[in-house]
Amino acid sequence: MMARYLDFRPPLEAALLLAIIAYTAAVRVRAFHIPQSRPIHKVSLHASTTDSNNDDDDDLWNADISPLQQQRQRHNSEEQYDWTWSILPLPEHADNTSIAERARCAMMSSSTNNHHHHSNNKQPAALQDRCSVNLDAFHNGRCKAQWLHVDPPVLTVDNFLTEQECDDIRRITISPPPAGVGRVIKLESRLSESNKSNNQGTAVRLSTTWYVRYGAPQVAPLLRSLMQLLPDIQLEQTEEVQLVRYMGEGQGFGWHEDALSEQEATMDAGGQRIATLLVYLDDCQDGSGRTLFRDLRGGGKDGKQCRLGVSPKKGRALLFFPAISTTASIVEEEDNGAFGNVYFDHTRADHRTTHAGEPPTGQNGQKHIAQLWIHSGKHTPVVFGRGLNRHSEAVL
Image (cartoon, rainbow, N blue to C red; front, side, top):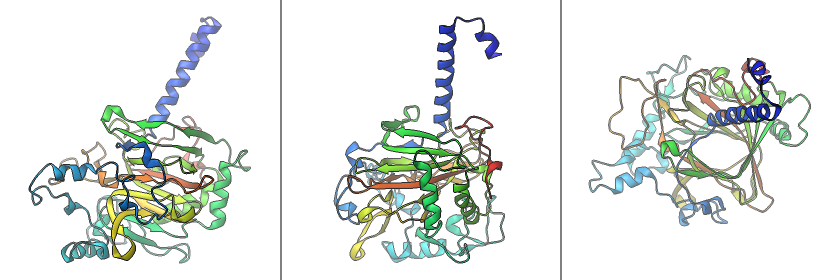
């Protein structure tokens, strides 16, 4: 129909119309992959200090005060407006014995499963309302999930991929890509990303991204390991595989959320993003290039608490949950802004998972990650065009 319509147009008008159609389609594709973001000053993209374990001692990564902290500061009564009730670090990082005990209980297996849990394995209370996670050793005992934070849950899995598997995936970013990869889409992020319609501010992002087909043999180990780690999800719930490279001290990703806005979390998109899996494909110099969680605390040197950060290690996977599952008829008790509104798919964004990608150290420093987002429902791949990149093509 479109071709027939263009036949009656002069060549110049037809070319202009096709250009407009192509641009509109590109904007729609990009909309599925813009994360929610919150303000951060551009200076925060530079490495904070030579000692990456002491980021709380400088103000670069603290340039933006947590909105949860701002809300607490607006009120005099900490008992009435204390948001810390909703955050549980590891017991050894807790401020007092009461919080430590709550954290220990949350890490214990619970007999109550939500609608996402179809396996026979009992999940810890902290993982209720989230994907079921295989906390036992897999890959013949090669790797096992480790807790870094209890609520919201943040876990890592070392040796998630072998060094050879990481190298094979990284080669996709080299032009020309290896045989069998097929078409790869490369995008440069050199400007600030924002979502003004949701008043979420701007997150500075400087990086290069490659979108890879599900059928590329190099990403097969990544997809197989994902299915082992999250045994109840279906491959159809995953977005296209993304490979991201940050090069030099000027490239990183400011504070942002992976949860989608209500306009973006459509039925075609698969609803909300309920899990984020990052796999580090290389090591970074001097412990730089960390993934930092703005509102979460971890252990530092000499027992000092500092912002939770995960250092890149080749083959290490990082798992966290940008949203929780709930029911449309039940709204959680007062949470002081920790969670978003209930969506059509019975999910709520978890604002506590706001995070950033720290730049790698050194002028020639590089950080490569493989990234997968998992949705609450079946995701329709759109980056390569509808029907041109199918989940069924994956080599599992």
